[in-house]
Image (cartoon, rainbow, N blue to C red; front, side, top):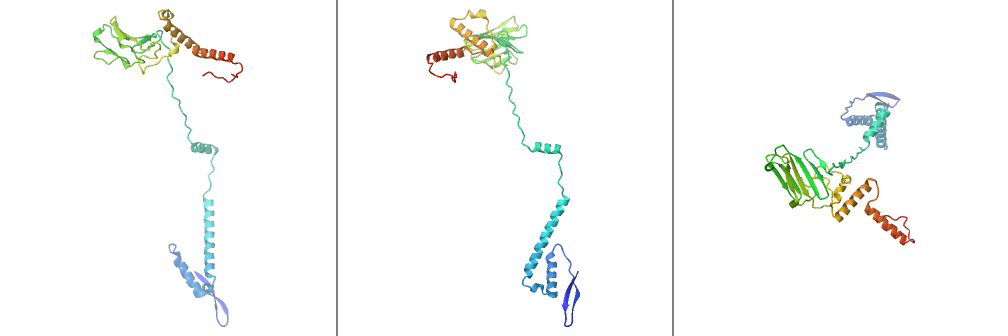
Length: 282
């Protein structure tokens, strides 16, 4: 590198090219700058100026700014934004959105229509009922003797099977029974019949043993011929239950709801001065 400087003598002023030898090491640029400043000090009065430091600092700042702009321009030219196709934009939007949780409602088992005996027929046995009793019928191999039967009837549990085999029925009863009024027998050595006397004789059972399919008790239809055998109070209760079931099936008010409506009508007639337009029956 050569730097031109002006050297004055007594007669004339002429430019002279003086050699400047220095190698720039990128790992140590300060050494190169030091040689430049030494050369300036020897060949000129620049460093003696009061404003030399400020001018050098300004030159350094200008160089940095120029370098920064050059790097920024280079980045813009090399890195171009990638335009996304409409389909890609939609897919990105869909992926970035929060996942929509679809709440699945638990499907509750639908009540089953009862059999002709107001009970249900299962694979291993069947049962029927009246308001007072539940009768369970279990088919067994022909020739089965009573001594081969294992039957335990408790207040809230029923267990039945054959000796040496797994129980056919073993579980908690739907409702309590009266063990002293329950019994079993074997018919024609091929069918075991168990009679269970209900503790609450005003309720229809939905199943015999808990955990089994439940019937729709609103579809229970007691035989009219058996109503005559009931005492007046029980018969009245049964007839009321049957009436309410029919009303519910048709979407009509039950006997209790009709009674409340009658009470409200009488009260309204006795108090015409009151406004009952927004009255509700609770």
